[in-house]
Length: 150
Image (cartoon, rainbow, N blue to C red; front, side, top):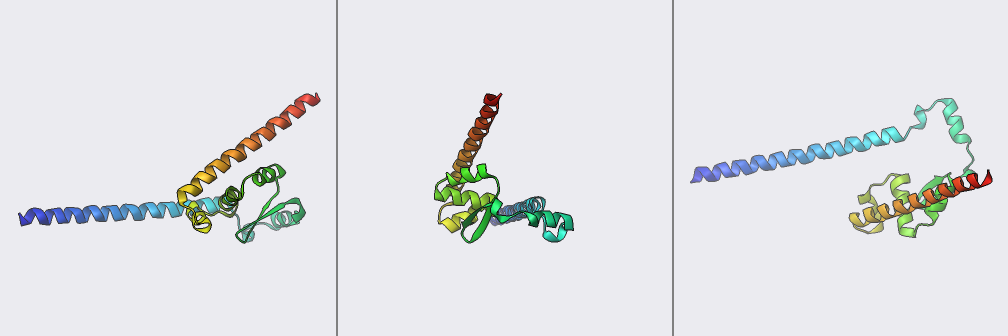
């Protein structure tokens, strides 16, 4: 009988070890994916050529609309996108700016806004749908204007 208990404890220990290893591996993969995404989407100034730096810095700040969210300055050049973001209520606007422009994750935004992570995900999904709808409607309006001019 003691032998069965010992084997059960050993099996439980092996199962727990395997579970812990799986969590660590998955966490490492998540970190790796996140870093890969950041490397693909962002470039350091030190990696840019002189020509690229001059071009990037030559753009006038007046061409951008500035949003300040939790101390982060977000500059957006596209007027249509600015208009769509401005139509969102304050909470959804903050979530969109923090997630897509500052690069925060849902958990970080949830802590900042004192919301649950799922609430942040729901607000972001709804806001994204509203932005897409606004941009789609604006695009259709432009196409109708062009067709009407002919």
